[in-house]
Length: 299
Image (tube, rainbow, N blue to C red; front, side, top):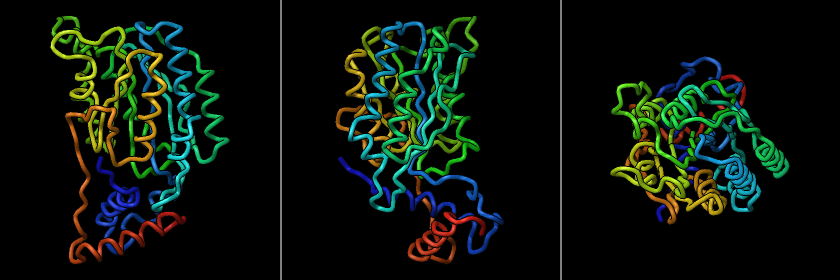
């Protein structure tokens, strides 16, 4: 298992920014002056379609709460090694039908054991807003739009999609009445817009395979994508918490794909070119200086 360091991930993002701003303050006052720096902006995109029963919904939400209380997840969030901030921002969205998307818990800073516990408590008390069809593409499209102006400046932007069935574009895309989006196209657009990674967790007890692809394979080809993107499978809701804990830990730590997961078929990596005339060493020096300055107000 090959891992990239957190410091390198941060440096790559800031190298790109330093190339844009050059030697001066071309952006004027810091573009991130009013944003809170975090290691990850993590969005949880939860399937609440009709195939999930009330008891399964409860198991799903309890699983998320349980995982955030797990030591491995909390250690990953609060880790300050390798230049990490020891904090993440997290948002919870529930989705189902074509126009059924709802922000359950908006962007929240997790930077202490108490803030994580408070968030876990909120997950357990979330009411289910929908129980309709499964428009994965529309859920993903809605989620990708929520990162703009969210008040946080994350080293990485990650979307975490959970689901127990195929999107309607896979199931019914050839029907005359279908007018929804294409999941893989929405995924590609999300990555192009600045999302670093889209991962998936599939719950396969009801729809292990329909047509040519099993559910996990469809997620690896059409839903997930980006740097170190993967899909992890839970064989039913009882197995959900364990798989989710592995997934969240890897997403927050970054830089590797868990051994239990399947790599996405769409892997991308961010490469920053050295600033003109500086070479790699010079660009690193500029980037480090800019990193320090961007944590302060102003330019």
